[in-house]
Length: 273
Image (cartoon, rainbow, N blue to C red; front, side, top):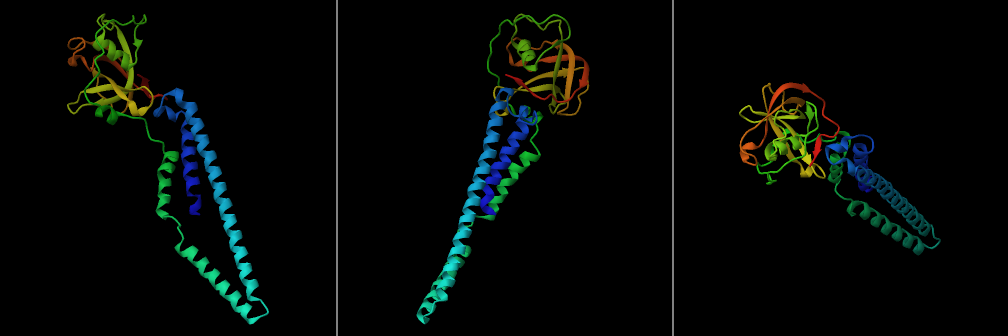
């Protein structure tokens, strides 16, 4: 049975990739939407490769079984010879074959049974896909941000409240010399993170390609009590300026919230960086 181990492992990994990319939107927890076709092709390729590997293993097993049957027949045929010498010779050959057969099964490289444990991570990925990155990942990012420089931004759409991505809200709050956020009511959606001193934030992770390159965008929330960490919320309020433009004191930006609503995690929990 161990000869089918590689095929089982390939099939499990391929099925897990197809589950999150072809049959659901779970892949958005890990990569951008544009990478879906590549995931589907990769998963299908792994499943087909598993079928091919299993076929090769089965063919090898059948060939080995036929070889054993042929060897046993020859041994018996030699033992049935007319002459006593032939009989002994056949018996010797049969004994030699028996010894060789025994050695193959006793001392041949069967491979460690513990290798089957390699299937457990693939099985877990298939049955229990990991959740999207959350507060733990956001809090691990160092408080170092690339200097973007102060400048002007395009005008915001008319009408309040205006829906903004947290990344855009942060950029305008910290770097916009035109103060386009001043006097505007904004609506932000993200998950809850908080500091040890009780300060809490509405947070979103920004990705360029996949979850591995995620960075954090967040806004400090004032005026309402914090829900539980990792709860997804939509907050509505106004920007509260802090510090000089482009200075460390200006980040993270602050929003004075007038309303808060709990929401479901979106299919794509990340913002495009």
